[in-house]
Image 1 (cartoon, one colour):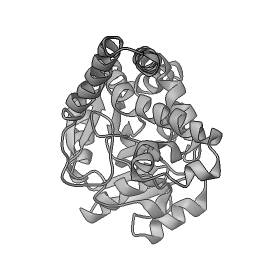
Image 2: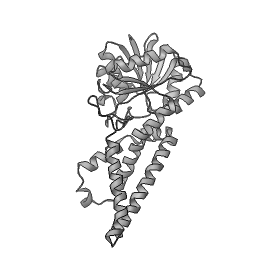
Image 3: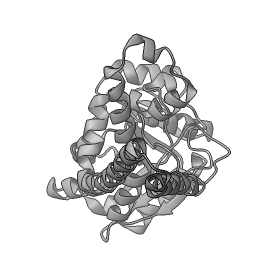
Image 4: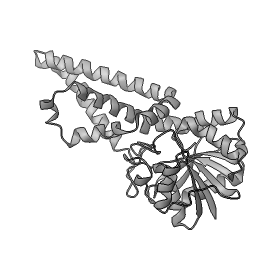
Amino acid sequence: MQSAAVVGTGLIGTSIALALRGRGVTTYLIDTDPEAARVAAGLGAGIAERPREPVELAVIAVPPQHVAAALKEHQLQELAHDFTDAASVKERPQREAAQAGCDLTRFVGGHPMGGREQSGPLAARDDLFQGRPWVLTPSSQTREQTVERAEELAELCGARPVVMAHAEHDRAVALTSHTPHLVSSLLAARLLHGDASQLALAGQGLQDVTRLAGGSVELWTDILGSNAVAVAGILAEFAHDVHRMADALSALGTAREPEQRRVPRELLSSALLRGVQGRARIPVRSTGGSAGGLGLSTATATAYATAPRGA
């Protein structure tokens, strides 16, 4: 690949651009906020202007609700021969792109599985995707050349291309990224009911389980809303588990006889054991940034710049 364009110079877009520039690819930076593109260019991520002729591949690095509009705009302007995106939801953008009349033969959905808690171009890293999965979701219309260019993009960024169906991807990230973020936020919200003396006792454990709650509210409303059905299903199952534990703990706390404590204690112990077993299934990643999705904690904690720019 000799030339590329990145639309949306937030954390993800700028990190992609930095990786491409490091591999000698001429990279153009486009953002509805010109200052963001200039900042990214100042970091060495590329050239903050439109190319004079179509580049080989354009990456649409904007939140899910803006992918279709940005794809339509830049296809009409002939920004690139082929297009991919970096949104953390795949079914909705694909459907909306079809409804908008985008050329789906020259588009393949993409999702680099890397992120950080910080946002914006200044948080970008050229090794953010090193060793990470990079999901590609070609449709039945996607031409082979488009997929090959997206695969090359992933490899230039140090990632491993993984092909999945749109729905399969969305179910996977609902389990491994989107629901964990919402649960972290719900737990963090309980702290609003604590007084200062209680919060003064908070330690690293609380920091760990509420870390994801610090993400952009606007961005995560978009992400969760775009994958609502899949997240709702997992959240309902989780809520069932929570209710079972609440009942078990209530029974354990009010039991007067040892025999009355046996069953709720077994339920509690079983839940803790299943947690240990589930956590052990998360693949260990030895390189790259704090990432997520597909068993990597959170794919897009604040994956883009301040949403919704970049379209």
